[in-house]
Image: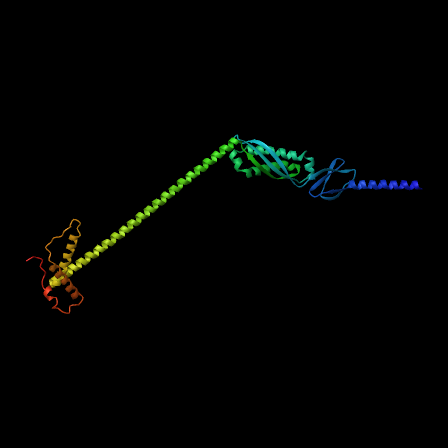
Length: 328
């Protein structure tokens, strides 16, 4: 009886262990970001998604555990000959993501090596078709061309190349020195051009200022000449009017007007003689009484003009004759 119980317990234990093994083979847990391919008797059947999955034990098995997240692949440096025969050293980086785990597993062997080789080959193709200046200044265009070519080439493998970036483009040392000298020459050329342009603008502004000053001076001279002519015209009109008034006064027998006219001419002549630079001593037979008499005639004329003659006997004795300038 005891032996029989031991045999049953052993059988149950064996069944329990077998059940645990079968359950372990049937239940598969896939982590997030991964995809497992399932092979039934060596043939691909389906892809397990993240989470809990059940397969047929001992018939189905896990073929490949494929990373479905975006991955980065370093592109090692390589030498590239440009279209103008310049040799540069180039490296980069590539980003890709597996979209179809079955294709990435069964359509290509060693996926990363295949992506790396096709990327390096297309880098040499694309960059070799450009000259050095374009290579250094059009990096975005190079990245875009590489991305389109490599993505189209790797799409049958069930992957998506999201980005390809060129990290460093290193020309030879002699080319770097030549580019530095060229850049220095260009900067010096721009500096000389800017300096010449500044001098040109300065000369133009100076000429414009001189032109405006000349124009303003000419306008000032014109205005001064106009005012001087106007003053001479008014002086001539006044002189003509005074002469006319004196002529009328003489015609009417007014001796005061004659005294005024003679006195003004007399004083003006003396002023011109005295102000001459070559005259140091003035010796003329001039009678002071004659000048005083003329000035008295002027005073009488002023009183008569402004209505101030109240007493006719005060100056009548002196105004009745023209003063004589001859010596006895």
